[in-house]
Image (cartoon, rainbow, N blue to C red; front, side, top):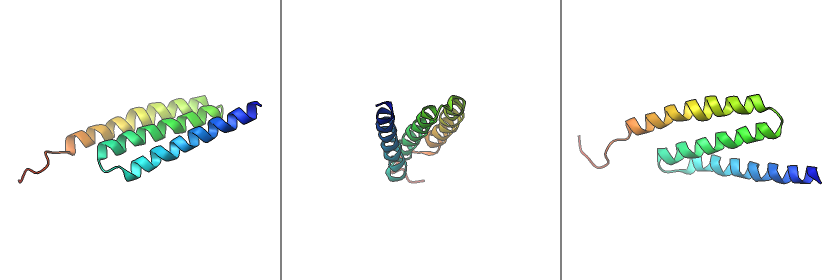
Length: 87
């Protein structure tokens, strides 16, 4: 019975990861794409926890979600200007 529960949890998180990944590609605004990327990277960390690789999951969250996503968020905030203003 536990393998059935594990399979259901894996399927749920796999579909969540695919959904977030599609959000990265299909989002029209860069900020929404960055938030979807954070969700996708976080669900990948959940997959690592399910594989009993807790250290790799912690590094995934710290390095990718914590570091790369924060840098991407700063880049999005600093490069988006006012729309419709002629230079």
